[in-house]
Amino acid sequence: MTIIVTGCAGFIGLNFTKYWLYEHKGDKVVGIDSFSYAANVDEIYELCEKEHNFVFYRADICDKVKISRIFQDEKPNAVVNFAAETHVDRSIESAEKFLMTNVVGTNLLLDACREYGNVRFHQISTDEVYGDLPLNSKKSFTESSPLLPSSPYSASKAAADLLSLAYYRTHGVPVTISRSANNYGFFQHEEKMIPHSVKSLMRGEKISIYGDGKNVRDWIYVGDHVKAVEAILLNGKIGEIYNVGAGYEISNLELARKIILCYTESSDAAIDEYIEFVPDRKGHDRRYSLDTSKIKNALGWQAISDFDEELLKTIKWIGEKQ
Ligand SMILES: NC(=O)c1ccc[n+]([C@@H]2O[C@H](COP(=O)([O-])OP(=O)(O)OC[C@H]3O[C@@H](n4cnc5c(N)ncnc54)[C@H](O)[C@@H]3O)[C@@H](O)[C@H]2O)c1
Image 1: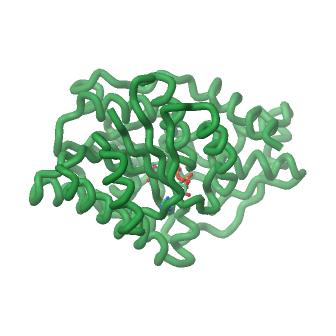
Image 2 (image 1 turned 90 degrees about the horizontal axis):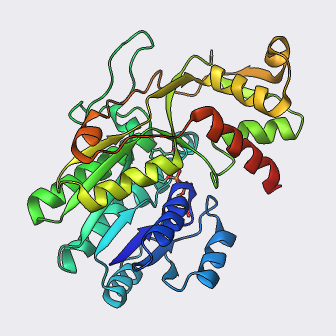
């Protein structure tokens, strides 16, 4: 089949593209990316040179003419939409780009899917659309939990989810959605917590922690996420949403300590010397937690990677990239 991967130069989109080219050698992957600041440009040029079944278009998903032409020329069987503005802090500074790419861009892709014969569409979403839970709560979000996004970023992602479901209901576009926990692994932009913390240590600076650092995130290795998307694309039920998480919940402070331990090999007692607390992010979500029993029971997928092992590899990769 021919599969369009938008945001193919971004962290998760690139991991997915590489995985799909390796695991589905008979398929053609059509990458689309506008090459924003978050893009891994060199990796895409390398893929273009090495992989005969990969083609790349530098295009904005909000560019209707270009996107229509790509659909016309490539006749895709499926679209996986990773393209997005993704950094919460940037969305707090200004939400405009987030609304354009994450909402208008997704809508435009859905229109293209509709126009070219109801092409299969998979929307990559986030656990942040559910909002947060109190730290002392034992609850986890299921796919039917209400949407209560806190940041402009998560609000734009929630809007894209609702649009996707509306296109399924109204136009019959075969849509699925995955809502993933925080990802880590190779090719993540350095503005995100793990690469940012490692880079700070590399420069001899302290790791900045928002507020009291007790905010809890559910972390999943990007390789597990990619396989969950594969399972949904191949066997997911049309019109359904699937939570994708590893159930590895850890506070930002605990994560920073783990990174410091891996990077500096310091004694437990010295760890806190590498940390500085900074004023909290506005509207900062306290805890994310996903119930992933639906995807486990329906598709047999579950995260299998070991957090400490993959974190160490990721930290080494960030160090070697310099
Ligand atoms: N990173 C995470 O922890 C995480 C967790 C849950 C969900 N997600 C979702 O996964 C998807 C990918 O996230 P990521 O971390 O890889 O993001 P990223 O910021 O690393 O990459 C996004 C990619 O999209 C491209 N892009 C941005 N605007 C575009 C546009 N208008 N047209 C075409 N391309 C455009 C960028 O150039 C970049 O290559 C996003 O939809 C995000 O909401 C991410």
